[in-house]
Amino acid sequence: MRFRVLTYNIHKAIGVDGRFDPQRIVEILAHHNADVVMLQEVDRGVPRSGHLDLAAHLARHLEYDHHVAGMNVFLKKGKYGNATLSHYPIARQRNINLTIGGRKPRGAQHTRIDLPRGQRTVSVDFFNIHLSLTANLRRQQMDRLLASHDVTDVAPGTPCIIGGDMNDWRGVLRRQHFTPAGFRCATNKRPGSSRSIKTFPSYAPTGGLDKLFYRGKLRLIHVNRSRLKLARVASDHLPVIAQFQI
Image 1 (spheres, rainbow, N blue to C red):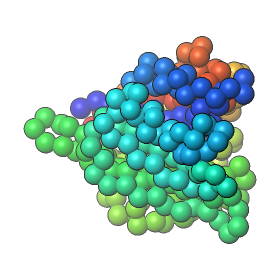
Image 2: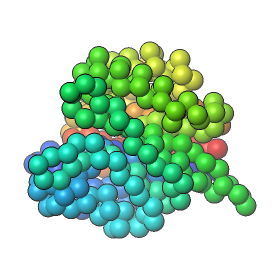
Image 3: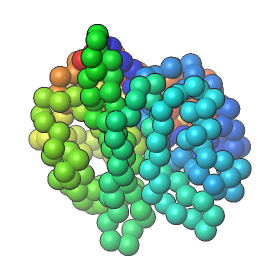
């Protein structure tokens, strides 16, 4: 079975032009039509985004039957975090606290999604993450995530994907954390390359901040960043889309 995964920091649906416009995000996601969508910076009840529950709004307009959100940052009014939309049933969901000390709250959203394969289903574990802007904190957050029972209880052969906005300009996390843990990088420019697909800033990308790593019985078929003109304005990041085969 083949399935498509998309990761996208939507920047609260506020574009580089400073305009809040969730319809632009809807159009971009509809165009790419991924089976599983991993979003970061998703507002719920925040004035800047019209007090919308953005995850529910996007799921409804895009006809995703299943969605969950893991809120990490709590504001005076509303909150925001990560959200996962899926065409297939979400068997479980948990938010893993990656906050270090008194620093800005961060989290990893763990979802287990049942994908159809013939007459049965295959479970794939997804971890939707948004890491710190600070290198030392990113390393600590990855240490915590990889040591969590959510990750260690997933058998090495079980299909598993970790993706999101990693804020890792130099690709340090791949070398120091993902490769030793048995993960392969889906978002290198070519197999074996150390250069990532560039996604930030959206209007003139210079950094590969948005990444996908995978482990287990998965084969990467294709990966690319969005080439839509609209995507260069709708958020300060570009979405990345990868197709896998179980």
